[in-house]
Image (cartoon, rainbow, N blue to C red; front, side, top):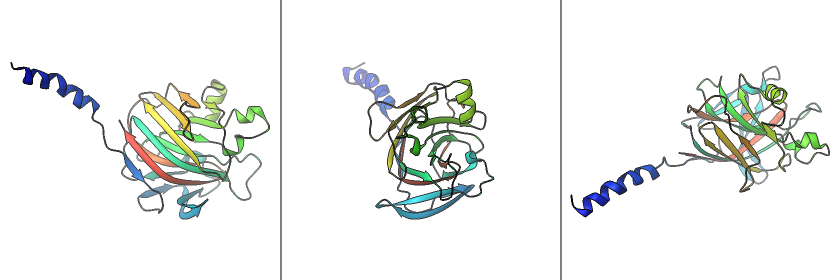
Length: 225
């Protein structure tokens, strides 16, 4: 065997290992390519940029059912980046937090998914306990936030600086059963989840808005591994 052939055989597996799927982006300036479930969806201008606005369609719906499927996206491992903003809906109760986030590994009917979201009004609250609930992981339908908080206090939520009605840059890095949340370009994650409840099977991606909240979304980029 010649040296040239031998070198090719050594190098080829490395080239294949480094290959990955190309990133997929959605500017989210129109409602085209989006499928709302339990959500009123519209294209708007918010804080100087075009975006989509999502509001839970009916108060009697469970907030976990208020999602917007991004058509054509498949995601298992990789990175999700998104600009979002949340605020309490007009006339909402005192407990409204402006819940807004994104789901991944989402089943086509949106009956199962992993979700990471933020509570923007908590980020600068004067109550430290409330600040500690600024970010949240949950898994629908078996592991809602209140079950996780009761069974594992402080494990699936954390503090991060944020404000309502303000664009926040969200980045989620997913590998196997681990997810890491980074906000506003921070190198270190503010939330680490080491036991994603749905395992490692891939699925779709969806925008998520919680009860009594208005969510704004822009500049979605998905980079599968």
